[in-house]
Length: 131
Image 1: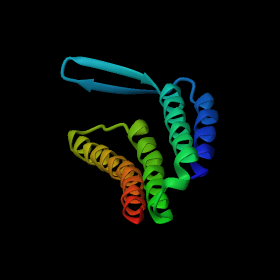
Image 2: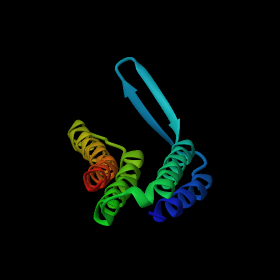
Image 3: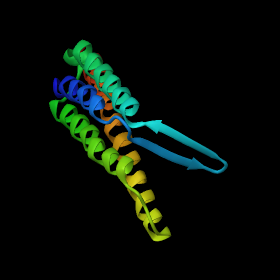
C-alpha cells in the first residue's frame, strides 16, 4: 500500500511540468476548462488520502490480495486518465471510441475502490465471529 504514497509524490511532481495543458469538457451548453496540473495535484491528494487510510487501518484488513487488487485497479486509472486528457478526436466516429475509454476508466476506478470496503468489512465479520 506504500505505492499509493509514491504515486502521490510522483503525480504532484509531474503536475509542475504540464504548464499550458488543459482538459476541455463540453456538457450541453456549458464548457469547462480544467488545468491538467490541477487535476494531477487533485489526484495526488486523493492517493495521499488513500495511503493515509491504509496506514491507519492496515492491521484491520483481511486480505493482502484485496489490497493488491485495489492498488492495481486504481493504478490502471492513471494511464487511462492520461489517454482521456490528451486525446483529441477529429471525426465523430472517434468520439464513440473516446466515450468507451471514459466508461472503461470510470468502471475501473469504481471497481477498484470497492475492494477496500470489502476487505475491511470481511475482516470485521471474521473478527466478530471469532469473539
